[in-house]
Length: 120
Length: 209
Image (cartoon, rainbow over all chains, first blue to last red; front, side):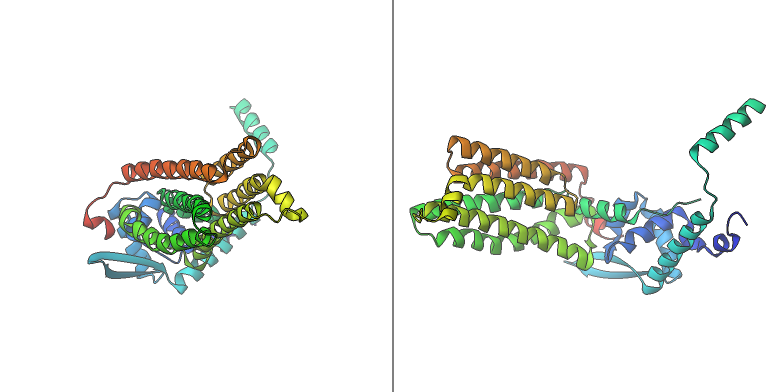
């Protein structure tokens, strides 16, 4: 089997979506962050970020805590233990997927592309 | 297929964004200034003032720095808690500044004292500024690397060059500290102005979702 199909199928699709992957990665490297910080770091619109966060919250990967700091509403976001484990597992599986790929040197790829071009 | 994200790079960017407000530079500049004043105080009054002024200032600086972060940085780029690792980095910065400052102070007091018969005193007396200059360079490079602030490399280089020039020309140590403090603080204010322009306040809603 050239690529482990089992590993690809097992990859958590909720995390695999690029925007959610960025959110998960951002929250993985910090203890907690608020909505504004995450928005700046991910460069997403508030609506987009909010929508992805809702999905992650529903899955139990992100904990959203609403509180008041100096009389201002504040939304703290934390990766739950389940979310942290899921992200670690996702990384492992992705590493496995890439390590299962056959090693092809850049030279071979260029030669193949060149031959393909000549045939056409 | 989405490739695995570079977590170290993400962490570095998150940490960097939180320290691109220039506040660290402004307060570091104030701290260098305090050491310069401390040296003057040892001449005018007593040696103990050389410790009281920088020591007292650090007790004042930290609460002001935290307050400035809350009033300027957090409303603009949001709040982030880096956990124990992040706190350790900040502690390392303050301890480093303290060690550097105290090192400079003790080097100066040893130079000033008339115990010239000892070899170590003679060595420090003759090369005090060079020792502090290269010490500053090493400390700045180490902190710059650990927290990802490239400006610190430049500060270290400027400090080393200024102190080597001071050593060669015989300029008073405190004057060099004042000049360095001004350079660091002016840079800090410039970074702060740029930060405020880049991240304008979006009203009270900015802190919420």
